[in-house]
Image (cartoon, rainbow, N blue to C red):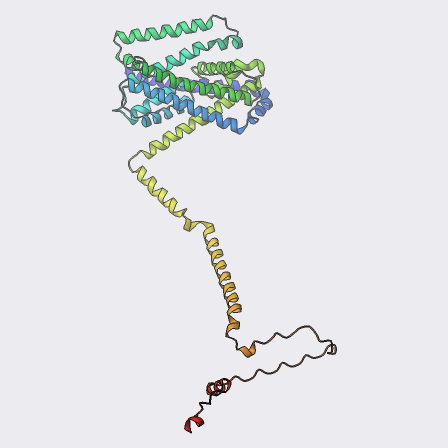
Length: 411
């Protein structure tokens, strides 16, 4: 009975979160509908290279945060591989499109389903989320002075934020030391210096990538934003992300921080933040789905067979230009053969002609004594060549020896 009640409460909570996200997006759209032209100009005026760089920075942030989660899970007693954990982390982004807590639940569920024996229990995985949140909260508290000017907050707010983060960390450590095993295993990464350094390093890379993405997109739409403004927008996005704003959290945070510089430009920057973040996350999730499909039994062998078939069809024998190249080569060889035969005939042919036939070439210049339009003289007939039987007599006559004909031999 109690489990059924809990399941029903979870279903109602999920439905309420989705409904609130849609309502917040619609409310923001109604506010910005009067400035549609300026909003459209700001969105379409961003260079494609800037948008591609923003997507790359989003991918870098996701990968760095996944590696930080991997360090926490390994320190809590898990033996899951990096590849399996990254796939589960990519699945968490799909749920995070609606709410951050849904993303965390989807990530943990995907990890437990893909590696139930190598991953810790659900409670330990929940505890492994806390070190990352502590580091992110500490960085936000250190840079919370950037919110004083845009939001008109008192100057002592950053000190209060730092004190709150420090107090929460000490309280968690006390509870873990008191006997909460799931919390003690989740915070195990903070016990060693190497673990703390790795965790802070990867989280810091993810945060810097997000700040760089904010700064690029704010300047792409024409907002004269500083580095502190980009940090303030990131803090606002993370804070408002805990509320059911859905996909409109980027535009809401940008308008909240940079609204005095132009509502339309700030909203355009927020829309680009949401769009590039969504594209980067979907690329990461697409890799996770593809890798998960290929890791199934028989899927890799089928993919190899498909790839070999495609490679065979796309081989050189099936290229369109191969037949044309073969025909051109054959035509070239035929022309070369004809030219060589013709040149060889012109050079070797006169050698086999008789000496009497090789006379001077007739002159084509007309004689001065010939009447105009006179008929040229007939070419004299070539003398008859001697036969084989007459050759000995002619040779003896020329040399001066007596003839060797049959009559002389009979004498």
